[in-house]
Length: 568
Image (tube, rainbow, N blue to C red; front, side):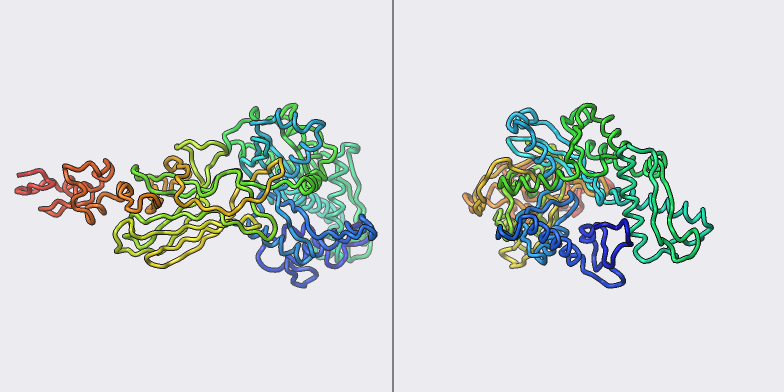
């Protein structure tokens, strides 16, 4: 839309997609508008424009599309964007993160795609996408013929719009000072604020091209006054732009250090830095990237449209999104710290439009029902690839379901179902078979991969009776906020092949075993683990003086007690 000759027309909305993040309506000329309706109007325009480009004779209308999204667009935003697309008569085949789409477009443009994939196999790639609304950083790894997302970091506080706003405020201040105006915004003609903002965007682009050292701005009938101040006349030098934007540039570039630290990588570990988006044309940003990744920041002629081209290629090639990391649950083990069981493995193909996949159906049982609640922690590894037992996990959600607090350990069974829908929102449902209670939790903080080969949709599966792959003890990422506590899981996997689950008694806390199985700690039995023996001695009171070991140590032995005190 051209705003250079007239003020912004009624109903003009800047970066409408970002409005999907907010709760409640946006206001256009004082009228409340649902964000999905605003986005739908933009999509309708694009749809009509595409139809006109194809020509009416083709008989083809745009009804389905691959949509790209910022990396910090979570489940609620994806759902809202799908709703907006439906209002515009467009079905979303699948969502692809913008940096992944850009990387695929870059790879697809190479003379020999296979050779390029072989060169990058096992290497790390940073996609640095700085657009008008957001700065998105995605660390990827080319692994087994797929683009796997390692880590994502999004920042909607340093987008290109922030540069334009800062430049507009600077020009406003200069005009107000030159004409002795105290409150310049109160005198602006309707629509002129948006027009000046648009002019600032053009000015920023021209100065970034380094073809001129200074740019003029002219806005006629800017203020509701007569005299010299009515028309806006101003200029900005490249040095002024650099000074005004330096703090935003520094903040954006600092995000690189954050994501590399998160993945335990250095600048030297990055084989390719793909810089996309209009903002990377600014010399300060381009120079900052080149200093960090010398010789590994290719200049892109299509940097302003590479994301759209990537989405088009993904649609054309029929590529599918997959999970880049497994989804796991924490189950009991003999150490007392817990171990991780994979509900769904990395590489699982995600659903397309109108699909919901039943990913897993696992049976658990409650080893310690005394609190009346079974707790299931759903997590993902912090790193990509093979996971070591000591590697940390990040918690995706904590699901809880009521159980019979008076039941014997291992009697109360928990059915755990996991589904993923076409918005990549996962839903874990727990049901206790004894108490008959149920609960559901949703999570959507998943990382995706893009399979670079055509794949067929996966069939539903369950893993009941399957041994599965067990991870190691909980890592540092699972420590509670206090720093000196560790959550202990009270659920264990149910073994369909051994209905008695005698082995699972080794996971039950020692003091609880002592309550239900008096002979378990018989000196002639070796069933008890060292952990259970320690717990029994710690929590079970002395049979004679009725004190626990901590109290005995604090108060000293009692004369005549032949129990835990050890005194005759």
